[in-house]
Amino acid sequence: MQNLLKNGIAITGSGSAVPSTSLENEVLTQLVETSDEWITTRTGIRQRQLALPPESLTILATDASKQAITAAGITAADIDLILLATSTPDDLFGSACRIQAELDATKAVAFDLTAACSGFLFGLVTAAQFIRTGVYQNVLLIGADILSRWVDWQDRRTCVLFGDGAGAVILQANNSDRLLGFSLKSDGTQNHHLNLAYEGTTQQVTPDIHVPRGTYHPISMNGKEVYRFAVQKVPEVIDKALFEAHLTVDRIDWLILHQANQRIINAVADRLNIPDHKVISNVAHYGNTSAASIPLALDEAVRQGKIKPNDIIATSGFGAGLSWGAAIFQWAR
Ligand code: UT7
Image (cartoon, rainbow, N blue to C red; front, top):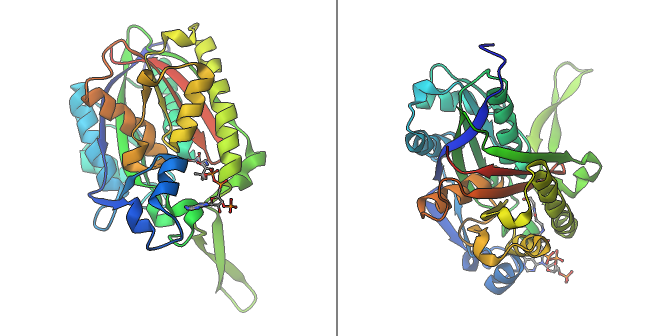
């Protein structure tokens, strides 16, 4: 440990990457009984990008990370910690170390963090603790997922929703603290509403001992329950984070929610009385990219010149666990 003085945190750069293959709603109508009209009106999604080999989570995450590193004006050699928020690593032992190697971030310790669609939020707060305690100065936080690998493409309740992508940010120690407030929540009693559950077939070790050979079931979701949960809990947790930040809702410049469904985004903004022009959304283009959705939306808004230094951003992630959380931060140094 280098010192125990508290440090502030600033998010100083962002990047994002999506795979090159797009799949439009109309194509899904050939797979399952659905329509472009149903998908668009119920979710706001028009298309999504899918990762096909040789594209991989490591490649997408590395591309996004390189952009974030450049935007922050540092080099990979400056990074102390790489946190990869994902539920779909290329390697179940974790993909963060591969990304460290691809970036040549030789000084950095790297590990994965799993919190489904809340992963970026949970990663943001985790990264912040290492900086606040003075242990690390430069952290690369990546949110990346390839859920298309785990979707049952015959299940219309889920296959129309998800897409693949990666987003990344650099967090740096800073004189003033730009992470103004946060709140994180979990409720495992509701776990059954959204799963990507382990499934064991059998393999024989000895005539008497059979152990499971692991794989996973496709994603299963009770959409109605998760919808209800999101619309109730997300405004509450944003209010809590605002309270921690000593701010009122009118101080928010931008609302960036996990991009699961345009109706959820609209309902949360309505409940908080946040006008449309402050709400960032790209769910129409990418669908639900899980841990990638918030940094992907953030990066696009920064590159479009919408988000400017000092703007106050309220962000919230929610999903499997069930887990949810919110953070209020001020962009850049
Ligand atoms: O990232 C993790 C967090 N996940 C979420 O936040 C997802 C939250 N849930 C949702 O976004 C929405 O619940 C969905 C988009 C998943 C579903 O929308 P909904 O308005 O809640 O629809 P529903 O589940 O109530 O289904 C309405 C009808 C049903 O038919 P019946 O029973 O009324 O005859 C479904 O069988 O729509 C049917 N349906 C479909 N129809 C055409 C379900 N999926 C489809 C489909 N195409 N793809």
